[in-house]
Length: 384
Ligand code: FAD
Ligand code: UDP
Image (cartoon, rainbow, N blue to C red; front, side, top):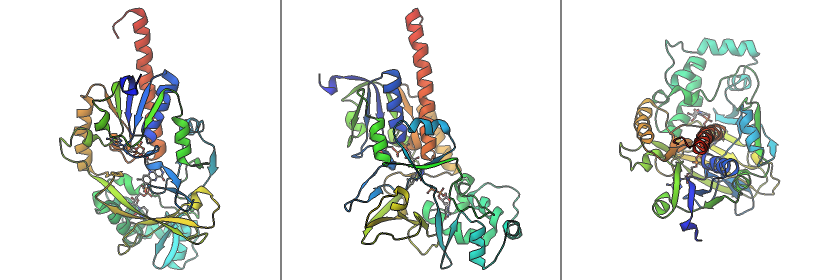
């Protein structure tokens, strides 16, 4: 029988974390027959990694660092990968120096030629912080902690480049991702679990969907299979506004242009990521992958990120007017039977990978509950 004659229990659009986790759960736990498709030529969504022309393992869509406090998520993913311990450290090119980001004790001492201790750093920042009656925007978050000068040096330019708007026009949650510290802890994240998949993300995804009930079609548009394949339920991990033909207008997303480069030297910079907050530098950061992957190679590969409005939808833009527009699509989604929207694009949320995995596991639990209730009702003859 041709696959086009098969009736799938579920068609999942999008082979990133959202779609792949759900496909794995539905197949392995409920015995459902799943068709997973992606318009890209590969699995993994934005977390996809591969060897470049020189054989260096790179992340095609920018650096992906795995960190979480959710043990459930770690336990789940650990079925498909071993881990390589990795604590992320970022430097910022500020005033002609490379200093730790997030701003910490060392950052202040280097930038201002001081020898502060922890209490001294707290006092230094308190003297500069701008007291505000309410913290509503991403600008407020920063100036209320470190004052205008450090805001300008570290956040104003980077944020304007990254989001194409001023930090005062972004939800406070955006810059709140980057804390300020008075200790010398220079790790970017403080989560309990910080590791990279030992053999890369793509191998982890391949193992996740390696199940006889999962069929994966890369380079496949939803529009191309919609009328051509039979399925009972649709899970859509693409942009929710696109699904509805932009009925209420486009949801704004921010995109990136990646400039990849392989260099004839073993190392380019001392850490995986160096940020360039200055407005006159057109890119936001440079990533050198070998720090993330631990790969030994005589060459090294780096990526510069140039934010843009056009291109793949990488970042939902957290701002009140966008949330309002999304709520209209969300209401429409709720009135659309047989379709579930999930993932970073399907629910228009600035989620990290672990949050998307958690979202998919929670969605699976809800589906499994209904499935069990349905099966019991069917056995007892009650209406399902
Ligand atoms: P995606 O990975 O975007 O997958 C959605 C898939 O759906 C895509 O592959 C797309 O091609 C496909 N698709 C969409 N529409 C259609 C259609 N109509 N037909 C067929 N296919 C379709 N998170 C972290 O935790 N740590 C990090 O360090 C980190 N760094 C990041 C760096 C960058 C530059 C970016 C952009 C994101 C980063 N993230 C990071 C976030 C992370 O990428 C996301 O949380 C995660 O990949 C979201 O998974 P997803 O499945 O929801 O979406
Ligand atoms: N940010 C900044 N300067 C920096 C690092 C971050 O202004 O050096 C701001 C910027 O607005 C960024 C946000 O903080 O988008 C969140 O940073 P994070 O590194 O968490 O973003 P990610 O790249 O993970 O999406």
